[in-house]
Image (cartoon, rainbow, N blue to C red; front, side):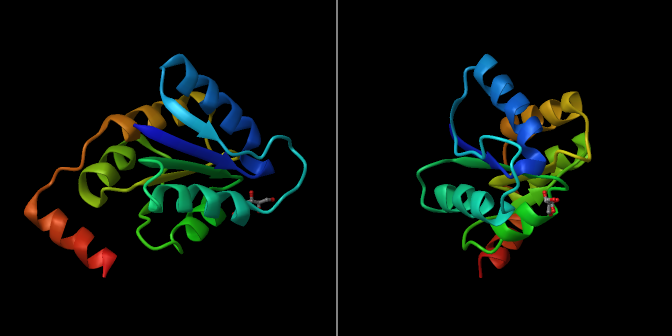
Length: 143
Ligand code: RB5
């Protein structure tokens, strides 16, 4: 699985911790920045993450800003992207099983590091259920 991860300044600290966690687990990933806490626009990083997944170059994307809201809205503007804003373990699993989400958004100012790592782990390892009803609904999202 190839992963693309990016954040704005509000998500920078959490991104650094998630990148370390991806490293420790041996995931194949690319970190597209930002590379400091200097103010920048979440749009640019979320768009790049989303386009990386939509193009097929990456299987999954992870995008972080202060709240996770701006990055999720921006990512969902890219055709083919189903970005889920997640701050708990139940929805991390449910959005994979039900929505086949291909981008995960989180807010670095909202959740603690350990919960964020656990959410990422669950989201990366949960498969789409493939049930007919969920496939139909995801199909409607794509329309
Ligand atoms: C940046 O201050 C902040 O607005 C951004 O990280 C994000 O929370 C936007 O949704």
